[in-house]
Image (cartoon, rainbow, N blue to C red; front, top):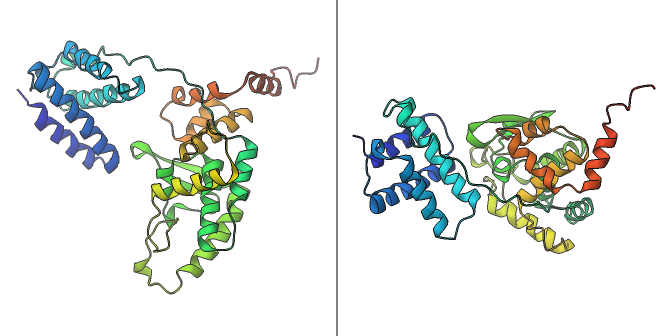
Length: 309
């Protein structure tokens, strides 16, 4: 019999060997130990082979009974335990038929309509940033990139100099997945301005004193996620963005997705640009479109538009 505690350590080591990001590994470890503690203290089970689907269901019920977590959060717990048990199957700790997660289904998630920025707000936010200092040019480019590419804030922070080419940027996404994103004309314009200001700002520093990230703070170190959050919130406040918009970098991602859909992009292409694992994740952005937006897209892409009748 294999104790769950030791197997979690083994799973963690394997994730590190596979090159998973530290944040992902720590998140999995936290969720697995939380489940392990419940299973041990409440159900008296400490060995992975003894866990049944009924034990898993009792844990899900426990998470629901606390009333502090939405179904989407509990589904994240379920997903992590599924990955853990699939690892145990792959490593032959247990047989596939003994996998307690085989018939565990996700909870139904609330289909929330996503409210995000409109075009006028985006224009005001970007134009609120001046262009007279290194920090201003950097902040303006950051906002342009968030709105124009839909990349995650963590992905933006982790862009390195070698990831940037003339026509595209290599993004290191979730689950160690890599993808390319385009560089639009407006992005290229402000990238040139920023890169020139960056050279001037750090010209007196030695090369080994400058971190190899594209976006740097005043100390030539990698820009943090919290700083980018503050940059966006500051300019949202300045221009009076609607209260129902949270003004987080993830809302820029929502804006990008809905704007692309309004412009007629297909779900598959959008999912590739956003770094989603499947199109079901991407399709949630359709719920934020108004009915007239859907009708206009349908009109533009009508099957008989190019047919001469």
